[in-house]
Amino acid sequence: MRSRNELPDDAAHRARATDLHGSLQDASGRSLALRLWDGTELGPPGAGYRLVLCDPSALRLLRRPPSIGDVEDAYARGDVDVEGDIVAALHDVAEGEDTLGSWGRLVRTARRLDPPWAAGLAASRTLRRGPGKATLGDRRVLPFRDDLPHEFYASFLDPELVHSCAYFIDDDEGLPTAQARKLDLVARKLRLEPGMRLLDVGCGWGSLLVHAARYYGVHGVGVTLSEVQAEQGSHRIHAAGVADRVEVRRAHYRDLDEPFDAVVSIGMAHHRGPSHLSGYLRRVRGLLEPGGLVLCHRMVSGQPASSRSGRARPIPGGEVTAEAGTVPTWRAVREVERASFGLLDVEQLRPSYALTLRSWVANLEAHHEDAVAVAGEHPYRVWRAHMGGTAALLERGRIGVVEILAGREARSPLARHWRLLRLPTAPSPAPAA
Image (tube, rainbow, N blue to C red; front, side, top):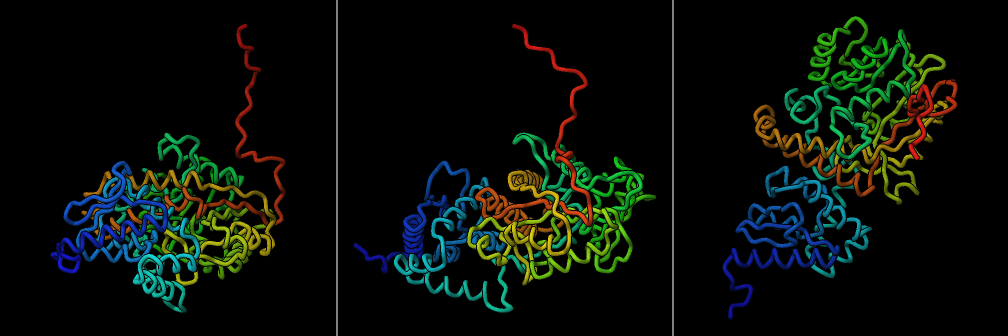
């Protein structure tokens, strides 16, 4: 009988894959559903997905317990494919990460099961945490720019191009309905009324501005650094017939010097980074009229270690700058109050954002050919992995999304009026006996 060293190369690689897969299962308690380059399948048959290792070089993904970032990177490079439910695949990877826990435990496990894992972990830790370092897995160099062709985003967003968390009240609800509810909820939280001036920081394609002008009669300005968004947002505002009331500018919020009655920032604040949060809020306060309201919608950490220390953590599943990251909710609230705002409300939107991302992933997959035609295969893979990984982390509670409502010398409402249903005009009839 041949020893393993005497097996043909392909058989040796297959045997190595089997060994590594078994070691991962022993370490994490999870069995990833894999398909090797030769069609061999490992792991459970009913997982709903298959991670496909395209050739033996992809075995480097298994040489240490993989993180979500590792799998996303490998998929973006084309080293692996993901057949089926990419959220389920990355959910299993995240569960393995959570089971293994701290870096110290991970390194000890790696050394026990496979010595090369330990070296890989040490190198990874240096790259991810060293000064000035950044890796694709650290979410700092992925091309999640908003200047891909407009048609690419249209392939997975709702018709109004709302590129942020929707507000679902039912798991089976359609994305357009949930996004329309979110826009209206924001408008009601900010107590918008005709004639008020609204600033939308990081306005995307101007969806909220159009909604606020059309249904609440406000005037407003949206700012974005994206040339594509500024151009398309202006076009959409003119098409909606509200160009006399609202506009999109390609500008930075720091360059504004005009007063507003309300300021909203949806999904932008965490990209500035925690070290810039207090400065951002102070600048916003300077733009608000007395009595004005600000709504800050941002990602937060859901991990206990971060919640104890208040330190920033790199955002899993989102492009950030070298300093940016998630902070626990209490840290975000603290910065709001330190900027001399009065806190009015905090709402956790984690379940809705997970459903939003699942909807976007399904839409993107359904329009694969169209998305690739306008942007290419690599951006398609990056965005599919990014959104799938973020959904998995939300579902596991490792990150969250909160909306913080605060005011500058603003009166606190007696109740959350924006959530109250209309009272019936007459009592409901008593049920029949």
